[in-house]
Every structure is written in C-alpha cells, then in structure tokens.
Image (cartoon, one colour):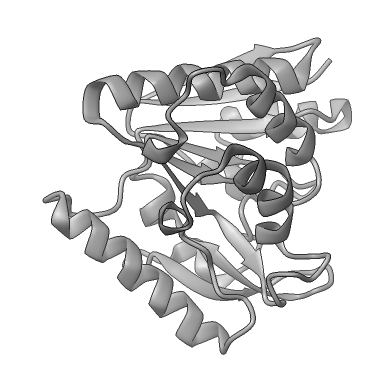
Length: 229
C-alpha cells in the first residue's frame, strides 16, 4: 500500500483532474466508476470543477456513495447529500439509481444498517467480500478526524460493521459514518485538504500518528493526500 503527498496551487482543478483520471480508468477497465464523496462545504468548488472538466464522461456509469452524513433531512442546510445534489448530481445528470444516499432523516441505527445492506447487496452481485470504491474522497478535521470518525469514538475500533451511528463534537452531533473496514476496502483513497493550517496534521497522519483517526486510512492500492498551498 502506497501513501503519497501532493501539493497544489489550484486545488479544485487539481482535485477534479485526479478524480476524472480515476473515473476514466475505472470505466475503461470495469464499466463503472464507484466514487465515495466527502461532506461539508469544501467539496462545492471541486464539484464545480468536475462538471467543467468532465467533457464526454459517461455519468450513467458513475455510482456515488457518501462517507458520512448528518442526521438531518436531505434538504437541510447541513445535509451532505444536499450539497452533492446541488453541485454534482443535478448538474451532471447522474441517474437517481446510481446515487446511494444515507437516510439521515430516519432512526440512525436503522439508517446505518440499511446502508450496509445496500452496499453489501451490490458487492455480492459482483462477487466481492465488501463494497470496494474505485476512489473514496475523504476530508480532514482540525482534530484529525475523517468521515465522522472522531478521536475517542468507539467506532474507531470497529472491525465488523461497515456503517455506524456516531456522535460528533460539533452540531448536528448525531451522524452516520463509514467505518475503517469499509473505508480501507477502497482501491484508492484521496484526502482533500485545501487548508494550509491542516498541513501539519496531514503530515503527522501520513507518518502514522495514532492521535489522528485519519492515520488509520490505507487504500488497497494507494492513499493520496492532496494539500493546498
């Protein structure tokens, strides 16, 4: 497993190019690109760059999942799905059946198991032991968390479940998150860290500093950290 750090002076454009490189390669080799999205506000610019650069990309062969979700309605301002819908799903025309949404508006445990079951069913049809993203996008928090896996969370030590209800330190606290067994099944992981003040945390995580949950992420083929200027 390879880990590498890349630096960017044009973050959104460089992130979009990296995603599209993976997309075209996966579609050429397997006929489908399975992309896991990261949440928050920062992906907006990356999604816009993706749409701008994706000339000729067959969006019907792109499948989207979410690394985590806030337990809110899908049209709530804090919903990761809402951001993705407004900035990527609707502009690209990805078919609704290709978008695997975490249902943050229902009981968290029910939503977590429903998402696990959906991904496992799809993986089973492909003969996979676990759903394997072609590319999983992740962010990095000031405390070194990724997805909604925060320092001290019991979910950090989960070895069987692939999606869990979790509690975060910032509102809205109730969330759903992929766990490391599912995250680390991805062929490639791309950490998106545009903020300069997180560079030291990113470098410590790459070095294996166990204080930071992000240090436990290891894509099957490669983990890339894209850092801003």
